[in-house]
Length: 540
Image (tube, rainbow, N blue to C red):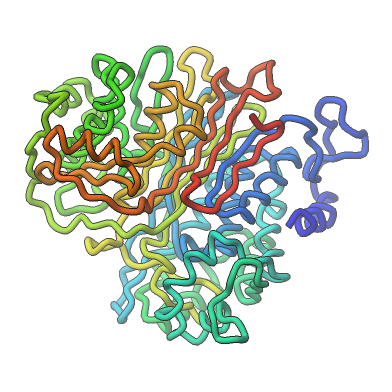
């Protein structure tokens, strides 16, 4: 993959203004070439390793965390189409330590509005989201950050274990579609395995258009018309007006102050954001989580999750894309009301409010990237269902995202977060997660363990996880969590055990970035339950 990036950089570097080298690097090294940054370049954690290597190369070429995020976003559509494609979208939280700005980018896919086929689809929002992120915070030429994904698709890459693991159980249904069968079927009639070559020529052609003509090529003009027809051929509902009128939005984050720090969480319509923010705020009350015993912590996590999820039903109503006032969602009075009546030894019998089907499919992926200057980006991307609608839009290489509905396909699992030092505005912590209903529990527990208990990210990643639903006394516990399950039973919870589908990605810089002590101050961690990759130089 590094070779692909290097060829792209060499071909395009002439279009970039020459820049002085950082530090004492080789005088011939230029911004945009892999290796421009020597030593500490930042760090990242991603669910899929091919995309992680793309992000690493962008950071070492002098790109910002936003450049790396854009490059990884596009790369994931090639190497991890089970979780996100150009037909999907998502949400990001961005912090720029130099400007002192933290904000959220909403490119959550909305339902397409055309006549419904047999596979209703969402509007493809990812490309416009990446354009918005790059336009605001990018440092490298747009062509350089799109080129690695294009090269992966055109020339092929090795199937990762992360993708092969998700392809295997879905292959039977996917192979009913001739285009997907042609891509993901081995000559022996079995689905691709780890290490098998995967080449996607049609997708490479679309990425070539995006690289050379800009992201707008998908939303207006002849190719947009072609995309609409391809969606309809796949059973979708996309219209030309859907594409023309869609614009991503920059939003104010949900902010939770704690000590000298602030936690910034993606706001609605990233609907896991308020659940994470409220849960974290409840854990902060009277230092409950930091001072709780090992036996109480699983109970406490379950209880705050139940309360936040129950509250979500009230403000969400029947609108999956509701955007209530951020301040009201995380006000001190609201948080105190939610945690009122908590008992450290007894399960509450909260009952979920009326409010429709809030099932969440375990689809999507997340990543965190930070550069040496203290810019950080945490993103969660989704197609709303594994492999979207399970069909290819003919001739495009794009798998459309499923239409967001109440039947598991919805934005309820989105909620990336970043923590900063409120005084210095330095970046300290970023988290992204995936796994449907397990996403918010994963993000909450990781954030609390690292920021409130002082655990190392890898230690926090390895800890067994728990989840409370807005149902009377039900607690879900990760398989093998014997002590946690017993503690919950003693508190009166009805325990259900399961293999945990949630995945997390974390970058933690406890001294803050930027910082003169650059070498070795950041820890990066991907989830051991998956097969992603976390990289930094040097890594601790």
